[in-house]
Image 1 (cartoon, helix red, strand yellow):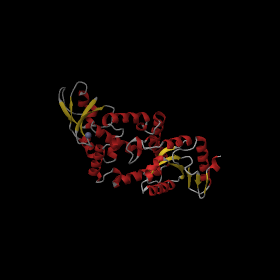
Image 2 (image 1 turned 90 degrees about the horizontal axis):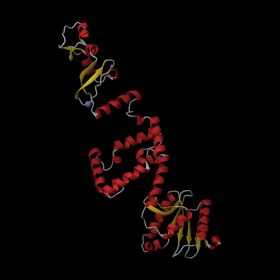
Image 3 (image 1 turned 90 degrees about the vertical axis):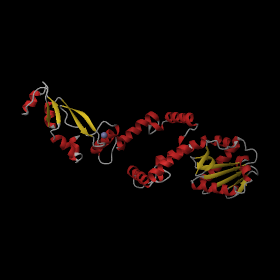
Length: 360
Ligand SMILES: [Zn+2]
């Protein structure tokens, strides 16, 4: 809008040019001759006269003027209706229109706000609608959409996730190198700053990292669970059996390690050392690795039940009794670890005792 732009000093010269110039050609017709004559201009029907913008608007029903786009400098024609009081100084190019819309939006809602998605209330409304309709905060997060995308990718590339293809990764890396001089967008300083600022604005000054937002943490946890359940990691029969028995999650990922079973409601991890682990135990690093794994479990806030057996575990009833004893024990004291050894029927906490005491 001219007035807005005039006020903000944008393209002012072009607007004044148009308002003051005598460059608008108007053809004298029966319909406008009277008005042209009333301006004191001598003309006859069929003549072409040059008028100012204001004069031309006065005599013409629809005025067609040539304008220069302020975004791309292209000269374009536009029709200005009699009753309209603005001239577009933006051409019909999609990109220019977008820039113009952003400009107008900024005028209305304040600097830095370029689209409705940046207004808090609007964003919340959109998210609510999407939650109702797709069960996700954006249409792209809906399970149907994700499934469809994965199927397409499978057909096209033989993989569910295109991001894991070497070609894609290489391409992303190259683009990032060109643009920011880093391998990943998230390493770029400007991007980091932008993300951190956005987070501060949205969630408060103490949040500098996405994973500090409570909802995100919850989501990450859920993703971990989904990932854990869906993997084809070697899982022993007993591990699966115990998992079903106690209704836990299989192969839960903490850091780089997978934990056999966890119960997130109790924050207890269960390591099932049976046949599967026997092959490992020949490895000298086995103990060191297990210690590292335990440290990781404790650091993540879990307590640990380690179940060691040779060939078979106990009956469901006995296993349940045993595990529920371990749970109660761990949750009622400061100890972090309990070892159930089915090979010699012992339970080891700070002391070692016969496990038959527990299951009979
Ligand atoms: Zn343009």
